Amino acid sequence: MSIVGLLPHLVNGLALGLLFALLALGFMLILGLMEQINLAHGSLFALGAYFAHAIATPRLPLPPDMLQVWAQVPLGWRFTAAMFLAPVLVAPFGVILERLMRRTYGRDPLYGLLLTFGAAMVIEELIRIAWGTRDYMLPVPRGISGGFLMLDLIWSTYRFWAAGFAVIAMAVVWLVIERTRFGALVKAGAHDSEIVQALGHNLEKLRVWVFVLGTVMAAVAGVILAPIWGIRPHMGVDAVIPAFVIIVLGGVGSFWGAVLGGLLVGMVVGLSGAYASEWSMLSMYLLLILIVTFRSRGLFGKKSVLEA
Amino acid sequence: MRTGRTVPTLTPAMIAIWLAFATVPLWIEKVGLYQYLGVEILIFATYALAYNLVLGHSGLPSFGHGAFFGLGAYGFGLAQLNLVPDLWFCLAAAVVVASVGGALVAAFISHRRGIYYSLLTIAFGQVFWFIAIKSHAITGGEDGLLKIARLPARFGVATFDLTHNISLFYFVLAIFVVVSLLLWRLVHSPFGRILKAIKQNETRARFVGYDVWRFKAAVLVLSAGLSGLAGGLFAMAQSSAFPDVMSLHYSGYIVMMTLVGGGLVTFWGPVLGAIVFLLARDVIGAVTTGWMLWFGLLFVALVIHKPEGLGGMFIRPARPAPADAKK
Image 1 (cartoon, chains in turn brown, blue):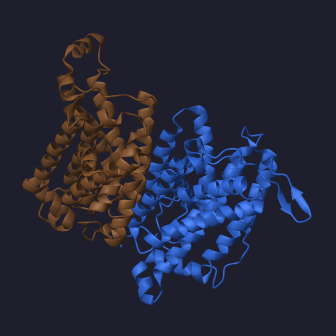
Image 2 (cartoon, rainbow over the protein chains, first blue to last red; image 1 turned 180 degrees about the vertical axis):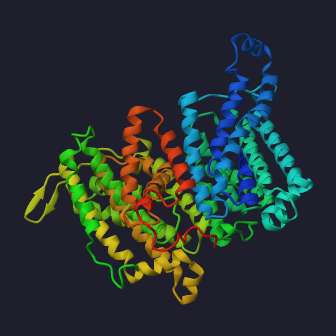
């Protein structure tokens, strides 16, 4: 295959990589700043997609006449509303989860992992009860759907928009973590919780907010990715695995590690898709095993409590 | 050691458990259940005991053990369909295939600790699961490997037909007895003590002079081989092998069984866990469709309030729970 032949796979890989990075970001926040593995990340991601679908199509549990009015609103507005409202609706699940996890703080991180595994099962089952096992599709407004021709190839318009949304969402998270007082406190708390508490800051409250931020990011990723991957009950498990692959690969606790990890995984999946599309998802595990064999903490990882 | 220098090979509790299992086919239908459930419980109890060698006895949180169980199932099925349809040969094939898989994984992860160990076992579990799904020509892909026969057990002079669930139950019970005896001896051997030392403090175990990674590799291979044996039995019981058992979900279920039963504090915990898990599946599943919801909630509650599991309610740990402390 020539370089030109590979170009679409490279571009798609890059776009996919940005989406993967977005997917991993919420997971990374909770792992890097709280040292908790949130296996329910994928389920929160799925909830975001389901809520977005309920808002955009519209299938909300509202009185029929109100629903009628909402259905008259152009899809573009409903989609925008879904993108902002769905994460807000998912946030309370994060608050509950954080409340449950409190008992495992300071213990072997394995307990947090197990607890969130149980929580993931519960959320997935709740989704099955509420929405059934069928697949849904999140409709995309006409302006950003469809495809376009470039270099004699058909490109999906929404993929590029989604990649753009991903960049914006990541930039917001970076600003919050690196450029605000909240971000500084949270990072300080992860570094030395005792000193931060001794200085009179309420660490418990900070932790809730970090968890909510991670949850909201999971839901945002769910909304943005739903039109591409589809909505089904086990989408959570399908999503949490690449997320953790990216984090381990990029290095626990590193923002740029997560971004680079996402891009690497996207490129590898995209390029291997050019040669063996059936096997493309396998390549990311092989990449992970390869990198971690030589760099045990991933690309940018630091020593952490997780190696206990 | 509470009982002095050595632990007896046979204990009253052990014999009581074996005898209790031996009576199961007599009453299981009278309480509204079915014979096959007994077979399934014994297979998963064997699997959970083998898994606990890694989790409970060595403190290695493997989250991809389904791969070894599945490798055993496929090893059994493929050996039977393509090589020799003999029970002993096929079971040996299951053990060998799973052990080789375990050795491959062990080569990569034995230098890792804690959560990194878990994450890498998840990655390897996914690799095996993915290969099983995509290799249609060998494994039948998502349709599975079908038409696996329940082969007769030949013991030189006598041959037992295992096509009926009751006869299969007693055969699986025999294997369970052998495996549990073997594991009991193993964890109370000098080798088992080193595993315990690694679990309590890996760095210190290394400073004492043990080649820690060799022990971690050996225990993973052993556990994988025995999980494969259980997988082979499962393929025979189901008359088929599917990639499901290798998925992250199933790998998580075996962790749940082991923890719910109390594998971290007692040797027999995983057996209790397997019974509770499969009974919950059938009993809660009969009442509502979302049994995983209720079992998941139960599991979350257990992790929060009783991390040592159900077994921990009956048995007082020999010393105050050491696994909890932050190292």
